[in-house]
Image (cartoon, rainbow, N blue to C red; front, side, top):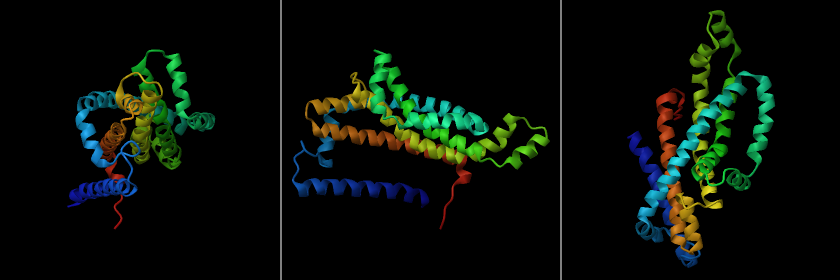
Length: 254
């Protein structure tokens, strides 16, 4: 029953959103070159179905690779900041300053530095935009670890790695997966920024740009919907992983 509820509620919410979108376009009398309606999208998906499959795969694998790199680097950086107050004080301002820079302004710089390295550039942008929340969450989780736990384990002869594996890692997992849910969406933003701002004919961003050039608004909105779908799929993969590795932290009030 609980599984059915978790499936039914998002589906109902999606249907209501699409119905409201369709109704708004109908009431306003907008043509599809101003605002495409949900009923305009299935023909666009069918017409460009092969492009959606090939370009969607291009976007997906780059996003996943960038996200995996962000998880590895963000976790290691978070561990450094979490276990060392000096490193935390030194790196936090730098990370905040870097994250405050609009990534759309970074795209041309990256594209100029690594000219012609389209896959690398796209993966790099997905990585750069998504590692920050992971690093911060791991750092906060480790820095708030109760010192008495560490003192007890040290008195029993436990190494730092044992302390991390037995105490710090389980405590950090809820914060880590919370940040990973945010990082998933950010990684897609980074991928598509590179695909749109510095187009190279690959990915859903390039397909969106093609629709913009040809004033094919149903195609543009179909691309946006495809991106949303891929983001939701990755999000629920993270949710499934969270239930496996940090299900104990889930609270079900009422």
